[in-house]
Image 1: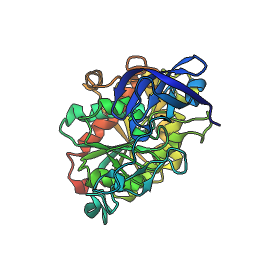
Image 2: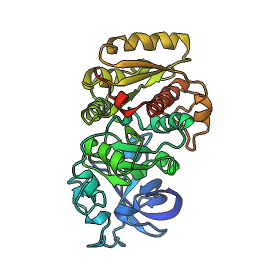
Image 3: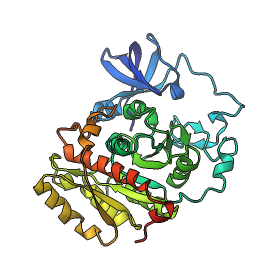
Image 4: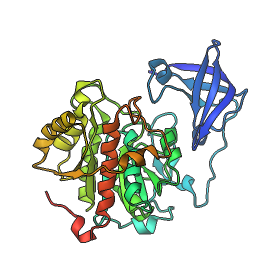
Length: 371
């Protein structure tokens, strides 16, 4: 199940929050690109011997094509502090019963400074929450929000359908300062706050981060088998249910494309249709951008017609959103396609952000929708 290799660090490459990219010469002489998370294994230096998991590298995964550093066996990091009010006082075990399971401080644990505010938190009080299938939608949604409401405090709840360490995401690193913070939930870890599940993560984003608006999406590396149900983005529908259960307002970002070569993802992706049409039992505002090419617009309308009985289909004007997308501080890319190559995809995500921002101008009492 694991392809093991050993090697020696020959050079340090780029780094971003929580991660370091390395050049490693394996014991067989092959040079590989590797990634280390210092919080888990320590900070590698040239000359260090490393143990590697090369599964993602051998499989050629688009988002995870690194050899991953499992350990620096000759220079282990020290144990975390045993006391004091910090994240190491926690009892939440993430990536449970794997060799690199970290123990983190939950935002609602007793040692957390947010314990008091979260102990009895039970309501989002009409908080707009944008749900999205792919991590690549995150910067586009943020761009749509900031185009109309630049001072909005945006929280991100990262689910565990893709990468578990938030540190893997260079997008998150580039959005630092654009977000009020990241809450990693489920088995995901490495966010500004940690939570047990989507429900407690949403409450932490609202009451601990003080977010005015929240985005829920998985980390990089969507998993899919090419079947109707075999994909990690089905959790989008579960996120809609969680938002509604807590009295928030779900806003669905649709995965729309006329550039994806796979039939199942053209028009409205079957991922969105299944998640919102079958998994989500609560009503959401599903955002449809204006200005799509006529043929694509017709295809989108036909695909969404069966969902109109449960959800509210909202048409959102996209004037100015192209400029907002081009000004985003991080590169836009989905399945290897940039903004111009898959314009409809990013426009749909930005339109969802714009709609969520518009909801902030409504009185809270008017934001809660019913079926």
